[in-house]
Image 1 (tube, rainbow, N blue to C red):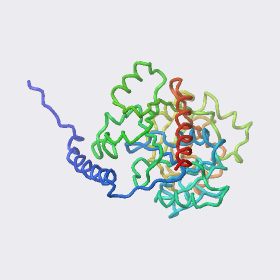
Image 2 (cartoon, rainbow, N blue to C red; image 1 turned 90 degrees about the horizontal axis):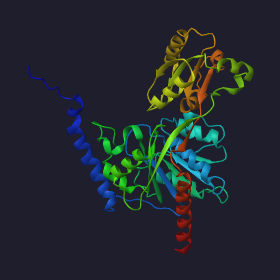
Image 3 (tube, rainbow, N blue to C red; image 1 turned 135 degrees about the vertical axis):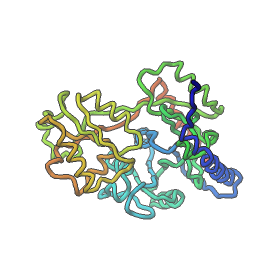
Amino acid sequence: MPIKKTLNPHCLLAPLSIIYGLITGARNLLFNWGILPSEEYQVPVISLGNLSAGGTGKTPHTEYLIRLLKQKYKTGVLSRGYKRRTKGFLLAGNNETALTIGDEPYQMKRKFPDILIAVDSNRRRGIRNLLALPDGQRPDIILLDDAFQHRYVTPSFSVLLTDYNRLYYKDKLLPWGALRESKGNMHRADVIIVSKCGEGLRPIDFRIIESEMKLQPYQHLYFTRIRYGKTEPVFPVHTDNATAGNYLNADNEVLLLAGIASPTLFIQEAEKRFPKVLPVLFPDHHTFDRQDIRKIKEMFNRLDSPDKFILVTEKDAARLLHNPFIPDEWKGLIYYLPISIDFCTETVLSFDKCIENHIITFQRNNIFH
């Protein structure tokens, strides 16, 4: 009996991907030819971004650069402030929330209160406003979060991230795949970071990826993995340290909330730490409303353990902290896992030196000109 072949439904999106590719390709050509304008600046502007839609770990990599640079340079971060309820340029103060500046900028502001954090969907306007700050406040370096496609700004240095589990050169253009623009545009990057690598990768795995990427001589390749820290309370003032110790042990049942693009690693980490994990997933950057809290309460009541608690991502913690629908009795039971990145191979010093050399060279050339 002959085998009947079935058509992959995703293939039906291929014509739309071709149209999308023509549009994004034409846009990039207009920038390449100088028809669409792109601005350069008198300070180093380091862009972090990706070719694909969805999470590749830009925020923890931005935080890594903040830690690297903040002791030596006055560092500013400019983000779009996705899903914030404000408009235009906003320089974050001490009273901001995820609603006023977005969850990721707020997360960074909480960690680094002395760093300039600004939001503006118009990156050129945002940079101009940062550079117009008075002496002593003006940044020496600006980090652009999620800006690889924002070509109205010409960064002095570009970092491109790609998820190990969905490498850009194996992906396809939207809507067939997840690429925002064609994979050939990776040549605009100075550094490419393969993020979210697993623990068991061997040197041969790294070499295969490097070979398949076909890097240009000026490009550097690094590999990083996600690191989760010690479980922390979302509402510290509502959490008794002695009581918290009763909740955070290997016998707990956990209701896991994740409103991020790629929750797989977070779920796996929770399952390593606790015997029973019940995931409840929401879209990326989700704002939890009254109905969501009601749904979460129903799921939470299904857990049998008397020491059950709720575990959320660091990004979700930023959104929940000022959420008016969180019941007071929950505030001592909601925890999050801080996130950071490690370099997989002995290349962290090489990466740090690459960034430092760029800044020194940029400043030297700027003085010369």
